[in-house]
Length: 358
Image 1 (cartoon, rainbow, N blue to C red):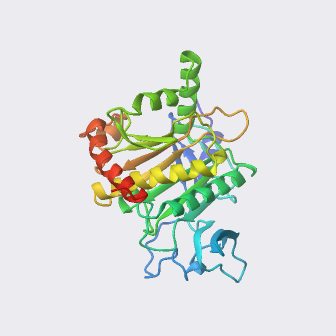
Image 2 (tube, one colour):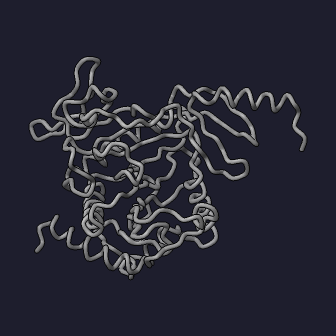
């Protein structure tokens, strides 16, 4: 294919302009996406943590602050000059967002494909206590966090330009966290991320051919098996058959469920229990490792292919090899069966402590 000089001039002009705006670039051939953000990550010299109580002015105003008053949780938000005090969970727009609602509406085609990185980026601070983590907060606090995630998820899907909402956690510097006060990220996109699109398409094809949801089949296979870590009334945690990380585990509803935003308070409480027990067990067994958490949820827009939602946890124990980076083949020095055996002991002990069983 021969490209005209005018075409290349257009691309070069675009290259100069996109350096300073939020945009998403796509690989020359693959569907791999890269967000190019104008935000430069700088290590703050301030000794103050921007997520700690008393430092609310260091972040954007809260869009939602949960405050316990008279035995009830009130949903409040900061005003222009007044910051809500005594909050238990706090939500605000990121000061260094990965995406922006002010992203320039500009596109280019391959070989130098780009599109606007349009979206919302929220931070959910999971506890006012700096030393708290998702592996140490109590079950009730975990439930509060999940209720807030649900609230924001529902609101985001009412907004124009939101096709998918990614929910993830970076715990520890090796996992990509710049601030060590525990928090959850929620980032919306105008398109479905490649891995979720691939998972949804594969699940749809599998269900059509086999007549069963692949995650339902997976849960049935793993529950009570050698890779199970823990189970509660409605959820099971297990190390996947083909893990991408040592000690990786997934948490899934036992029954078919495609909408996280519609789960009940009872289900939220049950999910909080298994997440707290597994993360607590992981943290104690590996002595507080860095880890990533990714919520694999269905797109909640109409006519989208649905997936049986689940949560994936990736402990960071070894750096990726060239085989993984260059060829997409994972090398695992620990079998998921052995990982599940070790984690199972730690997580069951953690669960017993949480529910008061000797």
